[in-house]
Image (cartoon, rainbow, N blue to C red; front, side, top):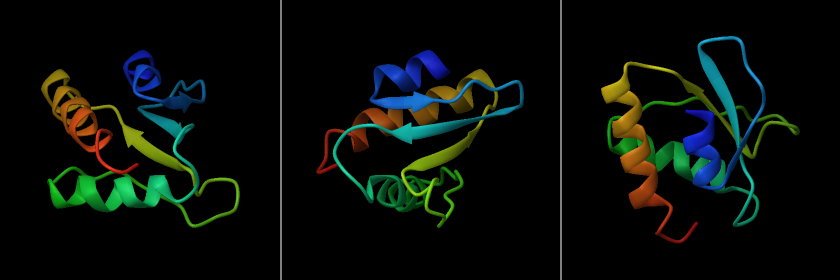
Length: 83
């Protein structure tokens, strides 16, 4: 999942947990919060934290393969928009 997110412009911190902290590395500040909103509109829920060091990141839980594929497909659509 980290490799797939990296291919889509995220930087993922190493993790031994069931989630990844994925930082939006391109398209400027404020994009993580916008992705949070747009993913939620599609029924996909990730976490965003309004803290200085985390504002450009999303906490993404690792799910079943089909759930991960749904998230990646949504990101593929959304990242072509104005991000």
